[in-house]
Image 1 (cartoon, rainbow, N blue to C red):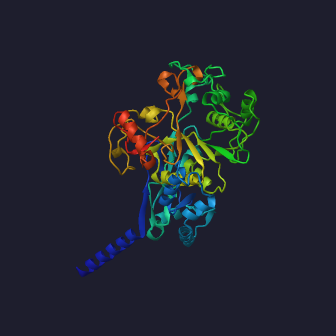
Image 2 (cartoon, rainbow, N blue to C red):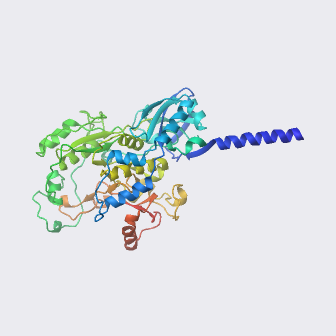
Image 3 (tube, helix red, strand yellow):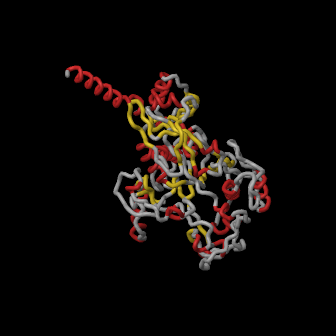
Length: 492
């Protein structure tokens, strides 16, 4: 009997030591189109990104609100890259993580300039040992149009960190993070027909608020029309500054189309910069099914350069492949840029409830740091109204259906906000229609002839920020909608 007790105590002691050794960091946010298959090969190489836990983020948020508030003595007194780094970087934490990696014979292959992010590659078997987990091969069925190697990836269903390391890390990316789902372009739904860029709308007539438009109201939107209607006094930018458009998902743009656009509308001839590639002369327009998608890329780069001329413009492509979430890739790139573009336009988004919380937190952190430097990030509010996808109109969207919200619960269906438009550190921009066809300017709506229905709503993850509380309260008192959305979330 005494022998059995001794053995039992020894087993309990071993179990306790294992439990103390590792701390559960995160479980994956599953989706039906992300399908698990076989276990990952033990000797397969896999890159992980270690996001170091940064310091003084609450203090930086308070500082940002001060410097973003008109009338405050510190209004628009932005910080430099180095000043933000001095406030937030955690060098001691980065060194502790590097020491842990070295103890396991893993070499750091890349380190951001402020040591906020580290990259390392090792065999799957090594990561499984260090993270107390198991990796599998997953196929992302939502990427059916992409190459097989771009939609197959290694992911775990949960991962752990040793207790002596966990306090130094915000997250380890490329472990459990499921990549975002991007909607197909609406022009693809035309199935080979020529894309319809001219609008034919059923909208009420308007006098354009007393503005006399010198440009013909013919259903087309040109740079001249935008200048006229919005009373943009100059398109002259500054060649010493830069702006960017974020692109991913194998989206390209055509330099020759950009030149044709500038020539046709008598704009200054200026090339875009494409340091990360995806510039092409082979776009698959209309009935041409070979080549590359250029719809979003061309639209984004042509109009930002038409409205803000002379400013250096970067086609900032971020790979969406079998390794890295494109939003993670972008924030890692930006975190390492000492002189980032002052305006960054993102026409991409995915359903917020399907995004990993660690990814959204990291995005918020980097967007907040950029904002403190006076950098603007504009993000599309989406193309499918409050549902973000027509197939989700009758799907449950209450707080009990998604595990990311810890505040006041809600119930209902049909509301699926779009990330990163839901981030409190970006400006979410919706689409309007009407003036180009002689009507009043209203939100773009498919039932009135619009190609899309512009998005908007309330975050299921980010709470209402203090600076938005009064506006959200007034909106909810005036507008009553069926249940299903989070009235305590960040409105966009």
